[in-house]
Length: 282
Image (cartoon, rainbow, N blue to C red; front, side, top):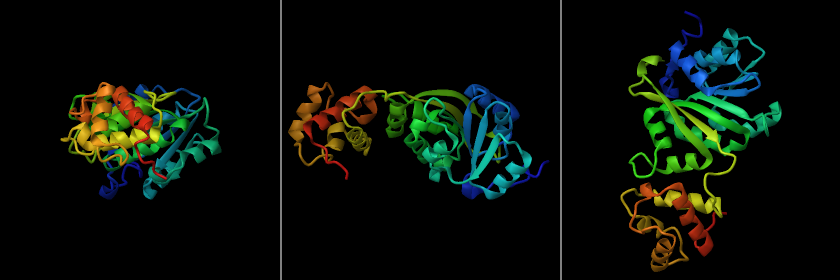
């Protein structure tokens, strides 16, 4: 057993190290990396993916929060192609990293990650904020989170995360990963998902700020109807006008948010934007 493999998992960091070589190869193969790619690996852990990435990409940047793991990774993989950054991915400025490495325009970063369950959603949101510098993401997440990401309208998994991710990315669930592929084994299954950043958003909206205010309000209380969730959104449009407006754009005010498609959320947001009804955040 190597020094890297002897590093214990830290429960405080939500660490579950991928140790199954077949699964590691399947993940890297599914990402389809090319020799000219610059890959950011989030949470390299024991290096199961790192070892495979070094031979396939032009450059690999591993972002590892655990200092002991970062040191051991540098020792195990003394390659010029690999750079280990000891940092919290939620605090990494990917735009600055892109400027340093020249990864912009047609040469954007490709992301691969085995994300700790406890930071999955904020990590995805953080990456999406830097979407102009990322071409795609191959992520291993808790199965339940992947189900929410790829969910379609009408199901209980469909929610705010589904809408936000699908607005910016084309999503595809690839396969499930059993608990036995990790050390220590988690209590639940994981899944691998691909998020391909769209060249333009999935739907056209007049004002993105209003669009996100609307969807957050719509999903605020899932048991409530759209009208009840949205009526507190604006101080400048009365309930009767809101009901009338929803019907004008073909949306029943009695529906619930989880039944609306992206296109319908766009129509809803554009209605509020056109009415000048939503207070702006300054």
